[in-house]
Image (cartoon, rainbow, N blue to C red; front, side, top):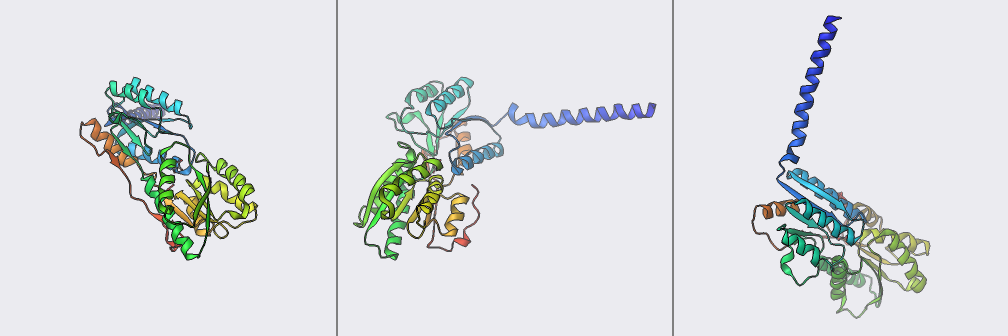
Length: 326
Ligand code: GYE
């Protein structure tokens, strides 16, 4: 009995020592993080966005950054409230992906008054005060739209098309990727008299809206649609079943062009139902952490940082496309 009791006490002491040493380790990064970063994410509207959030969380952990992450569920007012909370909390650096371009000046002036540097991630803002933000880390959306247009010209040539009727399902009106993808695409096809954009319609980057818009376009134009240019994979994936339900084969009867390059869209490209996917990488986390750490240290940073991107299409051997991470 005495021996049992002795063992019991010894085991308890060992357990307590182990527990204390464990909690000391896990507490460490929070007690003395390299940086406290407040990040306001737009929402969870797409595989791109979910991949982007995940990448930022992983990068924060890797760089020893303590991350206050807030999801705005697609509402600008939630993003503004989150930025105000970050200011009240006195974070070292604020980062956010603005859902639309307008309406940020007031809250950013508050951040400036508090002496907190602000990084734009993914999307830009429209302002006359250039000194409200330190830099923008995000894709070159104009180039993405331009590459989509260049692909279409090559495809139309290969099919000897005489006229090309295009419908465009755009991302959120007044968001940077919507404006710039559209501008790049229009500029790329501008010199080709065969190209005609019959209708542009806002699909808000959502799958449900992609489906709804495609139904509307099919009712209106039916088989007169030669090309569907969709500003993201989610809307494309929503549109495809509607095209099939209407009796057309996507990828054959209609040329399908998408942007993002998530795994699901790449799988459909391999099946031949999408013809071209322009890559937009959500992997901005490491660049964000490196830039935020530099700002905390008072170092200067590049004002615009674009990641490298490519085009996936039926012009290549799609079986060789490496697995995507989002
Ligand atoms: O293309 C889309 C998304 O801003 C690049 O937002 C991003 C876009 C992306 O939800 O899928």
